[in-house]
Image (cartoon, rainbow, N blue to C red):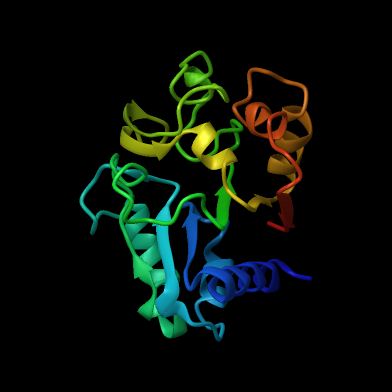
Length: 205
């Protein structure tokens, strides 16, 4: 089963059982082809809620906005009738979005960060500590581009029913291998605290 089929299958199962489904997606370039293909799939998209795993706190028309990327590549074709809700710090608490997530898509950076959880945040108990409260945090300027961000924390991501980790290119495959044992890589804390709900999708450059 390819990743598109896996996503559609799990969203469909949730719609059949609960009359709704939820998915969080990343920004970045790795998932763009997946988004483009996913947008064409037949599904009752009107029952699907979509948000972001993280975003840059910039204008939504800014080239660095994850929201803009999602609009251009996912929220179109069949998927344009889905219910997109921008990530905000109260999204988990206000009961307007379906948690736990049915699907959480993640990419990684060359430094092993995922979402907006970076190496210099490893000792931050609100972000990468698996025992902290499920939350969405606003984050001071970090990463590249060096701008303020908002991100789901590790426990909220781990609560997802299915996590799909998109690894594109040989460099990131090496990061993935190192991350199983290297505590200085943020991805370590995902890989070593996840249950059996992880699918890793390897893509060529």
